[in-house]
Image (cartoon, rainbow, N blue to C red; front, side, top):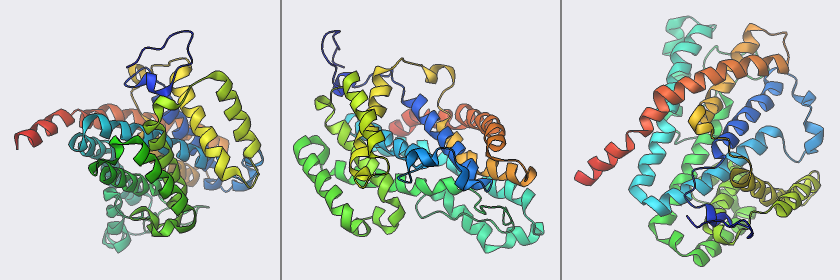
Length: 356
């Protein structure tokens, strides 16, 4: 890691390998923002979201949060591939996504679904949609959102609407792996040209992009992931200064409601993410909490739906408050007893691969 002097404006590349960053805090914040944003449509108060006027129909809170997730992910996984190679990259991605996802899907089917379904237990477990939901644990296909007889009378019937982003993320990982396998990530100029070409192509022909183009809705998170990769590749040329951060805030705000929003807001927002990650006060969340962001994200929707079923007359703020407590508890348990131990298997798996 290059040292940063007090007089010089630090470049993003100066923080290479620096673990004293606020990415975990940002991911937790983004995960909670998705929870809060979803509380309005889930409770049937979608049009009363207090932030809808602020965003002037250009976007909404949950979309901004998911975009932030993908920008951070693109940056960090590109760094992972470049520094550690393909085998480490693949093992790390598998251990990060699948253990928690598989457990979440199984708990949703066996515990939540069977307890809340309006069908007989035998009919519920015999229903093809129940078994089809198991495919969500692979994250290889667009997600199934319904379980038979579960949440069917609520404003939103989906059992876990947040899972739609996981196949997008996995597809981005695979495309990055292919790009890395060709050696493209080693040549910044060539990688930049390829990324720019892909970005321009995607504007009009996203559905023709391999793997990710199968679902038009995936376009926005894919763009943020690509921009995150681009930030990593160009990290040595990106200054992290307070004046630029202020300009980014102004540009992001000015873009709201404007036709040029898709071209200005993403880079401004992404710049703010990395400025906050490295130049704001270090919170050391990993030491005190670990990283419950993934658990918050995947457990929030079903818990919020359950609360609507139990307290149908309560609004979004009640839903947010109670769900935050319950989901944070589940996410902490998931991190400390499942996700963190699973990530600890990486060294053993790498050793087994090298021995094999």
